[in-house]
Image (cartoon, rainbow, N blue to C red):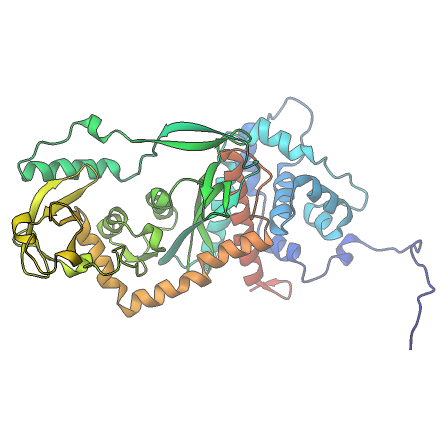
Length: 452
């Protein structure tokens, strides 16, 4: 039976408290129970005056406002303030009553520029929340999962200028240069002078809207200015650390700094898992030297169809040479400035070889194979890849770091940004990942309004 509501109770008066109106299972109740935000006072006391100026807005309220934005995926601080004005649960979380005035949306931005911009406040907040989760034995850091995702910059992709810049320096390049010169000297070659290792130049597109972003090209349809959020998680999905870079910085360039950051916070993990973008000799060497089990996937050979693969040539460690499928030697020739040892065949022998067409297209009939100085570490990675332990760990990537990024983009507003500049994007990353850790910790420790 169709019924109509003829009662209009909009003007009805009730004697009620804000506490009664917030649902018992609301996320803000769980978070308030799980985390004491008073630690923020000690973090910001140096940027506030104790005896001068007008009374400030409580810094805990300022930070809680940003947590509301990132916890519930609200697009901007302006929209967040609009939500706080009408949402009773948000008012309760901030400690406001029915008639308390909500701060203007520009308040946080002004405080950021005047107080927080050049501090590590947001990193400290992230690590404080992570420590709280670790103290509750929720974080399992023996296996770490590392990846990156691109966040679309607030910049028009058609507004740019072309510039020639030096390529970014990798964290492992200094130790690689030492290894190259040592190897050349052992093989009676002249060591390279320092200027030989100077970074090469490249032409890039630089945004005129947000110059600190990087031009990111995924395919013909995906070309945009973006930032890369590099992050690591444990096997429970807690984010352990993060670094933000322009979108044109390769994943492998950030791996070592991120791992160094993790080892300071959670200690040395037993294993580190990452996708094929990180599977390079330098990172394999880094993990092996630190006693961390490398967990990388299978990568396809990059050989043309119909030609011998590199694996068809056998390396003889004792005689330091390669043997081709026709049992002829490829002997050492030189070590390049990129850290590869070159092994070359004898053209006189190769010229009459029946497998020449499957071996090389070189006009002088010479086959050249390059072997990285740290190739043995990559071979160890390949050996471990076949173990059940590595297969089990790598399978967890889709449930850990990949899910972290999926949730961050779908539920916490990280698919794009309205902010500009590396510092502000670092703030967004730290607050987003802190909010996700906080949400997970609060949900897992909540049981009918009591700590589990």
